[in-house]
Length: 292
Image (cartoon, rainbow, N blue to C red; front, side, top):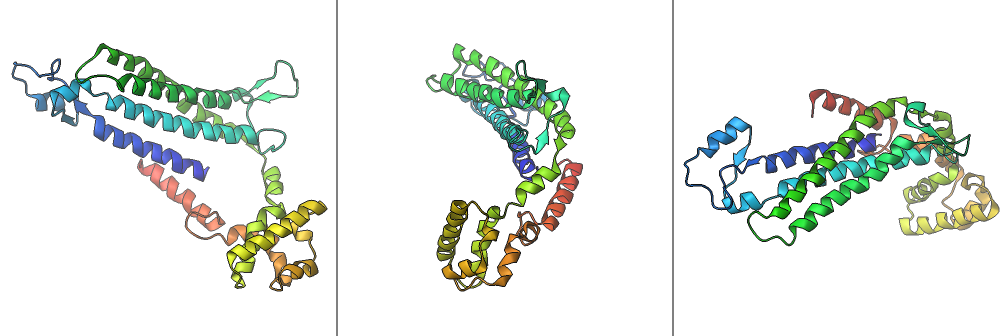
């Protein structure tokens, strides 16, 4: 979830940036050449809450960049929600069994009694296509228009309002759905303890002993192929067999296959050591508390 929050934070930043660029008052631009009536456009902008006024009347009536940019921001939010939905959907399958949706956000199958359908997540994933379609619709409408106002521009309303309604519904759904997820920690831990997941750690073990990574990668690739062919795991290969490929393997290689040790050693900024994860959680709590 820490990876997900980074994406949604970028979405929030995009929306703030979008507002700064698009909060421009067109009033007073007329049909294309302004008006002979003297207007204090700056005063009107302040009274109506706009950040500034449009500086060119022809552009002001032609411009729908604000619609396109806003729709792009919504499409990005939808994409991130869709990817999160896909993760949760996959993790809820019997093959993974990492999470289980609550009854309020899933339905039973009309045919298979044992099946639980993650309806809300699937609908969110599916409706992201509407957000993309609305963005492409207005871009396609705009691409061939001459300068100034054209009646075609009325088409922006349907795309805009539909995207707002679609993403608003999704954003209301997830804060209610996520806290009700049942997390199967035991199943996750069992999956993470697969020694073959630590093949990269094994290559890095050799690198730390002075071997070039390309060579270490090739050796470990050979070991993985051997383990697969024998129907076993990397940690089951005898030390004598490891030494046949490289004398740099030693008795300490056993420690490579400890997943907790592996996580603890990933201390670079952004990596998932327990200390880093705790620090990131604390930082996000503080940032959210500040309203950043």
